[in-house]
Image (tube, rainbow, N blue to C red; front, side, top):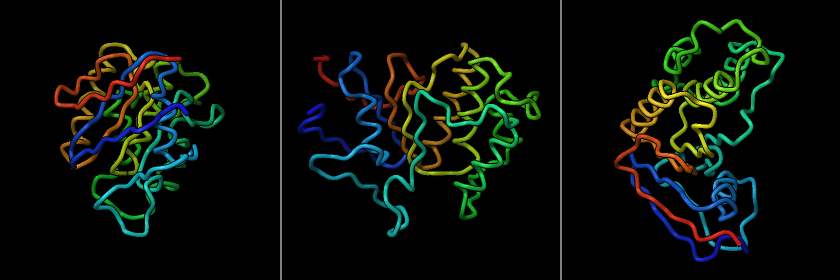
Length: 190
């Protein structure tokens, strides 16, 4: 059992930063919330969304792997994710161009993802969160490979997501720039 007797709640527009040493269960928690790992017990819910939608259908999960195809251009990758995830119109969905502008990648829109630097690939993956609004962002070490300017841009995007009523649960070892975030410190690795 990795996580036992864990409980938390978030109100609309709030963020939870999950901290703890390696092996404490941060990624496991995110995977369980995303519906990728079975739970031995308990429940997970998201109030206020479409009643027929389960939590994973209302969440973006950004893991260590960026979930993008190296052979496709940045635009092709984001077009795919937009079409796949943004199945209902929402004014909070951004165009590919607008999402790339937020993460500072407008200049590589036609480049194959595979030729980008690690930081650029991560920023392209972060743009995926913007092309299809989902109320819950599950982020596993979202700042990996990002320079200071890119971290600041993404912090602003996270604050905007919360201002729109979104929720964020992020596992991290680094400050995210979300001063109002609650913290959930997981125990020691064992």
